[in-house]
Length: 305
Image 1 (tube, helix red, strand yellow):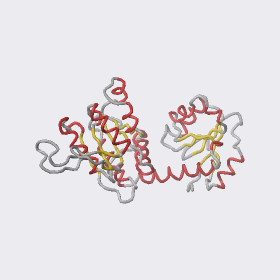
Image 2: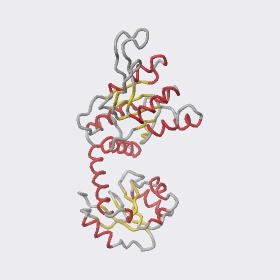
Image 3: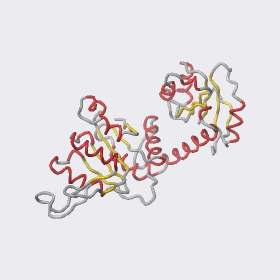
Image 4: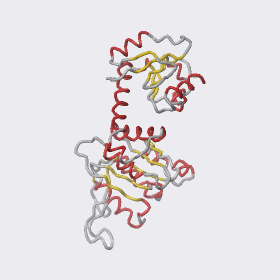
């Protein structure tokens, strides 16, 4: 449950009068709320609203310190989010948006949101994060929160984008470190810029003895080595299209065959990819498969310059 008081405020034609039933439900869920100090709207907050306009967005930017403070925007009715209004609120600084009547127990969901955010912020300030990814700006803090949350609370594939030298591999290593899977295995890194096309099958799939000239013994590839751990594909945008198709099958099916092998092997790994290319532009020009992009980019973390 929430450990610190959270301000609540209603934005709309009610002149700021909070919905009593909502406030009571939050109290029962363990969320301690206090009226908003309009002179200094600081700290985590819940913003109830029934319409989206410029005044609401301006207030969100102020109250959230442009996204630095956690503000949960709660639509009193579904109609308030018509036309994709949630994206407007997120761009204005809301940490998340939900509709009060979308779930059987919305107050418990609100409490769970703040409980998770509290744990994320605790990890963001922990030495394992601060000693590796250094910075305090609002943009950097927002990125750290995203990295910590996706690493700790999901197993989603992550695509890390950004210019060369901005620390994409450090982010990948942190995601692996924070991953909470029991009996987690190693992080396996494969630099896609160094993969020789003629030997790419062996690099990824491994090979059996005698699979080709020079294959004097069997070899495990990246998919086998990453089983139970994390596979980090650095500069994934450099992969040629034929290899992209093969990678897509493994990501979808979690099975592969070694070069020269007859039996299917199974593998389970978390996939983290990085690139300094704009992969959506590569997709538009036919240089990167759209289906692979959407498989590897469940979460996109963009590292600023």
